[in-house]
Image 1 (spheres, one colour):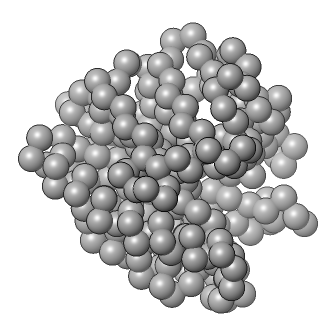
Image 2 (image 1 turned 135 degrees about the vertical axis):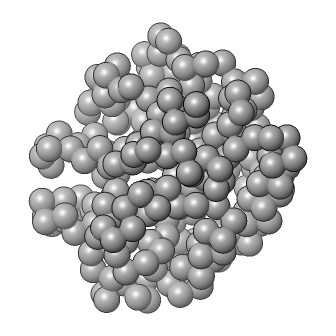
Length: 264
């Protein structure tokens, strides 16, 4: 069995002070994909930078205090790659992947965007470059007899069932028609593991604003995905969101998204 967890930590140093460390100590995951780490490796406390029993890869952004992705694996990876061959984005702390036996696991932090600003333009450029890479990765992995799972904060809700207030967000970044269409193209190549296992569910949401009572009312977005090649997706036996019991027990505005794959 391979258990994979993905979570946007909303600043790993802050999360470490709020409960990430005991969560890490208690998790049954074999692989953890982190996004929005917002720190260089030397800035992280020892128990987070190189925790006992884990092999870690940290890919910070060149811009201080922004983005950043990490991978934690119980087994030492056979190969690690930071970035996907983009002159604009490879130093932006947006993508890291590692080869484990038979499976490539990646951590992705897709730009959040903001309609009418440079941030949205950046997001669209990233999407334009990343989809061809996903297709290339799928083809190469198939040729090598490998499966792939790309985990992370994709910052797009694909369907109306993926966010509570979809009617009020139709013109906002994260639910724009062109973003949803792009994610649909991704899902022509890969499988949304959570949705495949829970086809009729509302959500389950993985992000809730800190404003108001969004968490208490479960007024959230499902923007954190595990996106797998078809062969691996067929082996997914369960997937769930590790939603905190109370607002006060959250150590991020996102919740971990976990899936278990039967590799036998």
